[in-house]
Length: 586
Image (cartoon, rainbow, N blue to C red; front, side, top):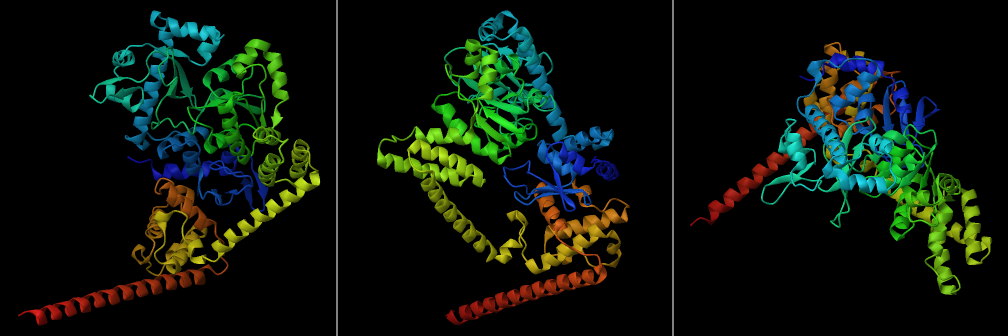
C-alpha cells in the first residue's frame, strides 16, 4: 500500500522548506523569497529560489523544482519512500508500515545490507592468513590499525568464489551479489567474485551506509584499481570517498586527492577534510556536493601530466559551484602521501597554506606550453592567456592577473588589458545575439522545459496553467469551475493535476503543490513548480477563472473543428480515389 496521503500532508506541514534547504545551501533573503546557488547544477550567480509562503523551491537555471520531498529525492538521489523516511525522522514522525514500497525500498535495503555484510567479511579476511599480503601492503604504506578500522579496510582473496561462499553461509544468493555489484557473470554463465586478490576500500555515503567498494590489486593485473559498478544504491558521479568523515571537519577547506590512499594517509596525519572522487574525474555533481560543506577547496593532485590535466578540469567545476579554489604544488614528492612520509605533517601543513591561487596556476600551465623567447610563441601565450582572463567575472581579478601575465611575457599591463577588453566585447556580443535569438522565438519560450511535456495547444495550456494557479492560491475556487473537466484540457499533465486537486479537496486533503510529490514524476513536478511560481492575482479571481475557462473551451471547440475538417478531407480523398478506380475498371 502507498503511504497515506494524510501522513504526507502532515509531514510537509511540519517540514519548513527554508530550514531544510539551509542545511545544504547558503540562502539569503531577497524580497519575499530566499536565494542561493543551485545544489543540482554548477552556477556562479544564484538562480535557486525558495518560497517560504508556498513551501516550494525552483531553480531558474536547471529547471528543477518542488517541495520538501522532491528536494530530498534530488539531493540524495532517493526514491520517494526513502525521501519521506528521511524527512519523517527529521521531524520525529514514524512512517506507517503500510507505506513501505515492497519493490524499490526493499531492494535498496537488501543491497545495503549485502554491502555491509561484505565489508565485514573483507575486513575479517585482512587479519587472516589469506589477507597477509594485503595487511603487509597497508602496513608498508604506514597505516595504523586504528586507521584500518576507522576506514573499514579489508582484503579479497584470490579465489574465484571466496565472497560467494562466505555470503552463502549468511543466506545470500549469487544473484543478490550480482545486483550489488559484488559478483560478475562470465560469458559461460558462471558467476564469480568481482574483487579478487585486492585490498578493499569500502565506500560509505553521507548517512553511513556502505554503498560500494574500491579494490587495489596486489599483482600486475589490470586495472590497478577496480570499483563497484553503478547500482541502485551507488553512483560514482554522486558520491565522494571519505566525505562521510570530512563533512564533520572544522578545517573550512576540502583537500581533493586523486585516490583512496592519499586521502586515508592525510586523515591519519590529521588532515580530516581530505576526500577523493570515485574512479572518475571530478564531476559537476561532485563539486556541488562538496560546496554544501566547504567554502574553499585545495586541489592536491599528483604533479605529473595526468594530475595537472585533472586539476585543470576540476578548477572550473569547483569555481562554478561557488568554492574558492587553490592548487597545491607538491615539491620533492609525487603525491601528498609520499610528501608527508618524507617531510612530515608540519611541512605539509605549511605547503597547504602556500597553495597557489588557481588563476596563477592556470597561467603557469599555459606559460609552460610556450617558449616566451620566441615572439610567435609569445603571441600565442598572450592569446590563450587573454581567453582565460576574459573568463574572470571580477574586473579587479582581470587587472591583477592580467599584470601577472604581462610580467611573464615581458609586455605592458596596458596591452594585456586592451586585448582582454576586446575579448570581453566579443563574448558579450555573442551572448547578446544568443539572447536575441531566444527572444525571437516567444512560442518556444512558453513551452515546458522538458520535451516530453510539450504543449500541443499553447494558448489553451496557458489558460489551463492559470486555472491551476488560482486553485493553488484559493482552493475555494474549485466550487466555481462551471463543470470544467479534465477532458477539456489540452495538456494531459495539467488535466491530471486539475483532477488530483479536485479529488484531494473533496477528501479534505491538502491542495498544495508539495503534497503532490508522490503523484508526479520529477519532470512533471519541475514544470508545475514553474507554473505555480508565475504571477497571479486573487484581486479579481472569479472573473479571471471565467476568462481562463472560456479560453480552454474555445480552444477545445477549435481543436474539435480542426479534427472534423481533417476527417472530412480524408473522406473526400477516399471517395475521389474510389471514383478514379471505378472509372479505370474495364
